[in-house]
Image (cartoon, rainbow, N blue to C red; front, top):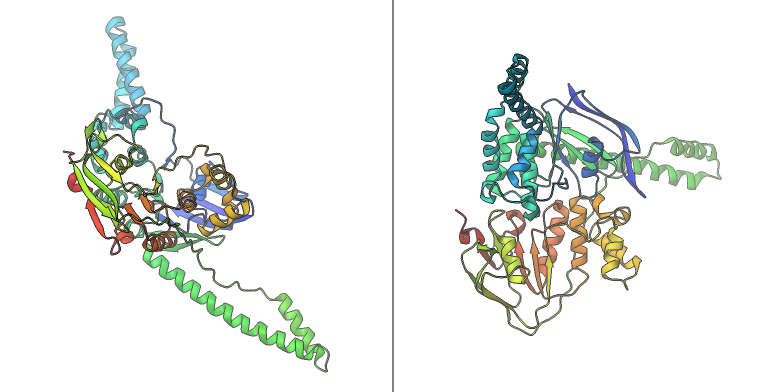
Length: 514
């Protein structure tokens, strides 16, 4: 039985149609992977399903009384709220019942009214039915699984990094135990061990799920059906991710054959018409014209948009690019043992280690954005550093990519900006959408496009592949490989970093966390 029925779904922004007359169902117990290029409309689809956006046309019908859990990266969290209090909000209704029950017991102690005792007993039964007294154990289990224990229960949410915040939002959503789980790039900020925990959780989850991810290994292990969002269509495939992709390639090959076969028929008919339009066979030529007019044309298979990047290089005459000596990074107390390393001109260095170990903190300390607890970092006097921060934070998220770049480069012509954005894989429609309505992948592309507009000789990129589709990752990798200057890359994606960087600093081995 379907828990979700989508029919006739049509959605567009400006001059771009995301999907037209799309139809699919999410069945009970199905774990559906949602795939497609950045900007294809995957995140938009989720927002339509939960009612945050209205489609141009079509119907979204959820089964009655379905409890939906959505991983909302931008949920408002009250200022000053700590981690454990935020997780407790997953059970706010049960804690409210507990407060009522305790008040009834207090009232009974003074009034001795048996009716109060009866009401308190009913509330006690309701709490027991919902395993209220096992909640703290369940919270501990989820915190351990997602690597939240090391943050500390009293850690204020507002002081957390974007990755840490995403993890606690995911934890709260899982604790709510919904009937349907909607996840948008859940593995972005998880290290290998915590991804394994999430895989086990999802495989044990009896409800339905929709999971947007560019981590295809992850999808292969947690999904049993796939919807592909591409070229204005939403196509559902049964089976694992790999099986779905084989079906997609088979469908593409069939379309290619049918297209080519039809083109042969069209070419032959058009040649006949040109040759015989005015001759004795003009009646036959007119018949062929009518045949062509009635023909339903087969479209050729479309290929994915290829993003490309080129980071401008400003030459430096210095052989010594960076010297880091006994630097300790942390907020008040050190996260890592003292770090010492050096880089010569053109070297490319990878910071490896699990998420949350302190890679971003070390980068910010080296850059001077966070004061070093001890030690020094010294760039070459001729170093020109460009820095990519993984957090998708904008001065004004209501501005479009076009306006955002224009603000930083006021003399740049709008046409030039649009060309730069297109090269990064941002189409005309998304170039004019507010930043806060773009997917994480589209926002990341805008940040990379901005990085291309200033020449440098030292790139520092902190998790630049989060949210990106495979085609864009490949374009970014080629650009970084071709960059003549220095590079410090923070990344947990082995498929992206394997085999082309000169040095590796394993930050995990430097961790002082117990």
